[in-house]
Length: 282
Image (cartoon, rainbow, N blue to C red; front, side, top):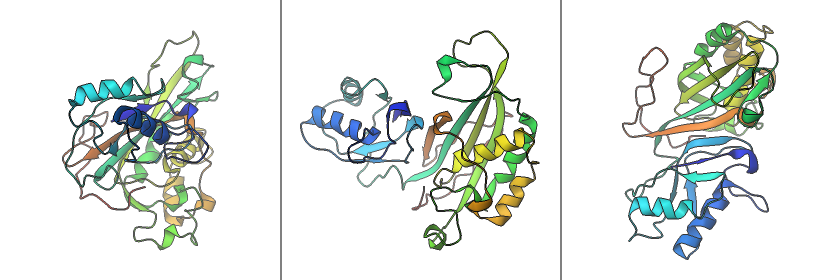
């Protein structure tokens, strides 16, 4: 498992001539094992998106080394904005993307004055948001829905190739919640409050969480009522969907496998009934 500050990366997936998480991880593995190594990730994150629970797989470049020693050695070879939190040896055939049963993303906002210590990790809004209205809108996404109105990258329109795929833009959202959170850094004096949007689903689509966040902020600003989300689900067309929230407030929080379960919701309710893994998770 690995985490990273996405500010300095052009996303997680390796691309030519730019710095990515995958490229830095593979370079560290090559230095540790003395041979070129490829990796697969549980999910793609866009430029500027962070992670605390990303999962990656590679061949075992140092099979004689205990897992903890392997992690420590690899961490000495990775840059400061990329860290390995745990290493496990798995059975042949394990795939971090296709074997996942659920994923969790969290998006954080700060409503108030400028806070330099969190500018890279939360979307700062100066105007007060109606958190209760945002919460009422968020629960409308729970269940199995066509999420085309919240799908970016040109894949949420009726004529897209995604629309013709087996699952298309249909996903099951086990939990979508909005809650107030306290400052998680050294705060400068002045009024303000934090908001966290948490989504747990069987799979994600391009820019889904950022688009949902943009819509929830519109509801919080009272530009739309909470019921607008039901209209967007029914219309299933990105052209009528919300604006896109910036990347830097978003983190890939956790990926679940087998009998893993997410943390309960704020009321202590278990979130997800585990389903078989899907082979087309985004």
